[in-house]
Image 1 (spheres, helix red, strand yellow):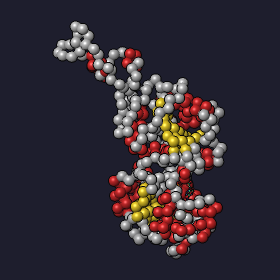
Image 2 (cartoon, rainbow, N blue to C red):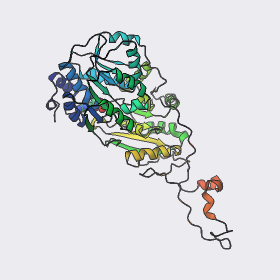
Image 3 (cartoon, protein in one colour):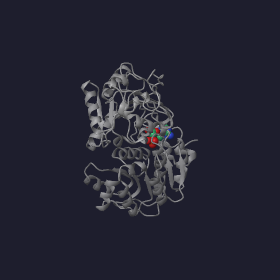
Image 4 (cartoon, rainbow, N blue to C red):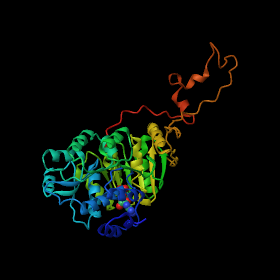
Length: 449
Ligand code: AMP
C-alpha cells in the first residue's frame, strides 16, 4: 500500500517523501480514502497510530481542491482538542503536512493573551486547531465565524468530556453549520461519546485500529514494587544504574511532579515539569527542551501530557500509577510509536494495588514484577489477578487442635479468627507472614495536572 494509491495529490506526496513516511499506517489506510470522499468518521485510534496524518492529509487536500477562499475571520476546518499542548502539536502537524499547499493554519488555546489570537484570525484561517473554552470566548467576541466551515474534527473526544468541556462543546456545535464533514476520534467509547457521535455524525465509517484499550504490543511493560516513600530514590537509582537516556515520567499530582523535579535537579539531573499550574509558555518551553534533548527527564501529570508526540521515546516511567486506568494506556502510548519498541516501567507501592488491578483488567494482562535489589518494599504489594482481584495474604494453615482446647465447637478457642481486622495479634508477628501488606486507606485523589 502506498500513499499515492490512497488518492493523495502530488504536493502532499512530496511532503511525505521528505518526511520519510514510506507507507500509510492502518488508520491512514482506512481514513484517508474515506475522508477524501467526504464521509464522516468515527475512529477508535490511539495516539501513536498515525491518526493525525489520517485526518490532516485528506482534509488539507479537500481544502485545497474544494471550497472558496477563506473570508475575513472565517474558518474552513476546525479541529477541537482537549489540551493546549495537543493544540500546538496538531497545528504543527498541519503546518508540516501542508507545507507545499497555499493554506493557513493556526492554533488557539487558553492561558495566553487573547488579543494576538484575535488579530491573527482577522485574515481568516483555513485550519484552526482549538481548545473548546478559548474558541468559545473568541466566538462570543465575534473574532471567529463559522459560515464557511466545511469540516469539524473532534480529536480525543473522550478526554474533552473528561476535562468537563461538554457545555462548551454543545454551545459550539449549535454555532456550526449543519452541512459539514465531521470526524470523531476517541481512545475509548463511553455512552456519552456514543451519544455525541449519534447526534453529530451522518452515516459514519467506523474504524477501530487497535483493539480498544489494548496497550501497544511493541511496548515492554513491567512493574517494580517499592515503598511509597522510596519512589524518588528508586527512580534516581535506576536512572544512574541502568544508564537511562531520556525518560518521560508521570506523577499523580502537580505537587508530586514538582517534588520529583526538585529532587532530580538537586542530584544534578536535568529535569523539567509539565503540569496545569505552569504557565503555558513554560510548558511549551519544557516540551521543546525535552524534544531537543536538552532535558533528560520530563515529569508530567496526565492532563498536561495527553497526546504529546515525542519522537522515538524509548522509556516511560510511571512514578505513580494513574487514577483513571485508561490514562495508563495513554501514558505508555508515548513510547513504542510508529513501529519502534519501547519500555514502560511502573513503580508501584502497596497503596496503589487497586489502581494496578484496574489497569491490568483494562489491558488484559498482569504486569510482570521485577524487584530491584535493595528496594524490596516493607509494605508488600499484594498479588493481583487478571480479573481484577487483589489476593489477600495467604491463609494461615489450619492449626492442629490443641489438646484440651479444641479448634472448633462452642466455648472453645477459635484460632481461625486471628487474622480478622478486629482481633489480629501484634503487628510485628503478622508482618512476618508472607504476602502481608494491607494497603492503607487511600485518601481522596488529588486534582491532577
Ligand atoms: P500520531 O498518532 O498522529 O500522534 O502519530 C504518531 C507518530 O507517527 C508521529 O510522530 C508521526 O510523525 C508518525 N507517523 C505518522 N504516520 C506515519 C507514517 N505513515 N510513517 C511513519 N511515521 C508516521
